[in-house]
Every structure is written in C-alpha cells, then in structure tokens.
Image 1 (cartoon, helix red, strand yellow):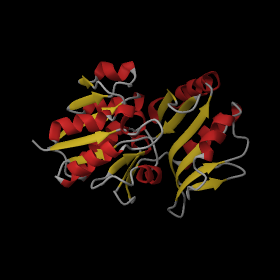
Image 2: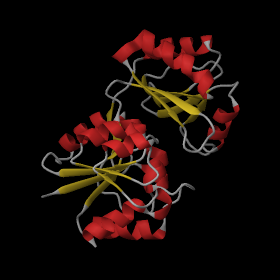
Image 3: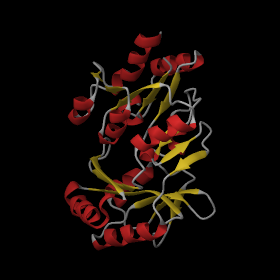
Length: 274
C-alpha cells in the first residue's frame, strides 16, 4: 500500500538546538530519492520551516502555521484558513484590556505575508523576536492592527497572565475560533494561539490528502505535543517520540524508544525502509 509520512518539527524531527543531524539528513534524502513520501506539519511559518529544512529534499506540500496554511515545497501558499479583520480587531481589544499585545501573522492587502509586532513587548516576546531579526516578514506597527487574512494571533507570557485571557476568549468566541494554550518547549512561558476553526493539523491533513492525491495512502504521523493530537486521531499510525507529552503517548499506536535528540524519527524510518 502507498504510504505518506508526516512529522512534526520541534521536539520531534528537529533536535532541541533546532538542527537536523547528518543521520536524519541521510535517511530522509535517501528515502525521498527512492520514492518514499515524506513531509512535515508544524506550528512554524513557511519561510522558517523551509530555512530549517534547507538540507532535506522536499517534494510535497508542507503543513505550516499549526495547520492553518499549506505551502508548496517552494514556499507558495496553496491553502490558508484565516480569521477576518473584524474578529481579529476584537481579539486585539480584549488582549489590551489584559494589558498584553500579541503577534499577528498573516497576509496583508498586497498579498504579502507579515509578522506584525508592536512596542511594550514582555521579555518572552523580546526573546522570540530576537530570533526573527532577519525575517523579511517582520513588520513593526506603532498601533497593532489586523491584516487582511489573519492566520495566527499569538500571545506569549506567564501561565497566570494568559489563563484569564484564554478563558475570556473561550467565553466570547466559543468554537468560532480555534484556541490553543500550551507550554513553550524553548521559552519559560506559555503560548496562547488563536486560529481559524479549520486552522489545525487535522483539517490540514484532510486537505493535503485531497489536494496532492494522497487519499489512498496509508498515513503515519510523528509528534510530541498537543497540536499533534488532532492529526494523530486521523492517521492510520500515530508515532510518539520518547520525549512526547503523556497525553500524546496515550493516543499513540507506538511510542519510540528514542527522543528527538536521538534521531527518533529517522531511526524509525531507516528500520522500516533501509
């Protein structure tokens, strides 16, 4: 049977220092050369994902932005599920009541992908921004406002600061938007991410299988965290790396004996196909 493999990036395929080992590169490129279908599903943006994966052979569309967007292996946007300007403005207004500004990521009126930010960032936001200094999407706004297509609105802060905000968003919007709240794997804080209700990896997996002709393929997915769980429930095989959250391991069909820092995904693939 034809097979499609989809792996998360952070804490799954990537090592914790955001690198890809030579072993993983060799396994991935050898398998793609032989016709094995491999791709990724990540919370990261398209440009950053392609930068991190520049040494891997990519032949199929990539799921990015938590599943709110699918891009080609060249970076063209193939699908985006965005929140409208009015709703995003309401999100910004509610956040300001709690005295916190987010990042707004999406597409502007000129069709350009933007990563908008403003002043008065907390230390966690400043730390993240420092990693994106050379990113062409970065756009400072004195008064942060919505984009034409708002893919992700992201708040970063301490758990006690973001929990009341999350609760208010849930009360006001209900299931009209997708709300994700999770501990960041790198920063000492939490991410509160607001997306279109179809902006998750599960919906993206369905769309990918339709758009790229993978309907008849058996699907194996790899992951470690909450935003992988929807995709896990849809896949034929759900593989958790050893360092995955317990909730992810509970719904996995297999838990690997290795962590992301021990090339868990590549070792699994090499045993299956090399």
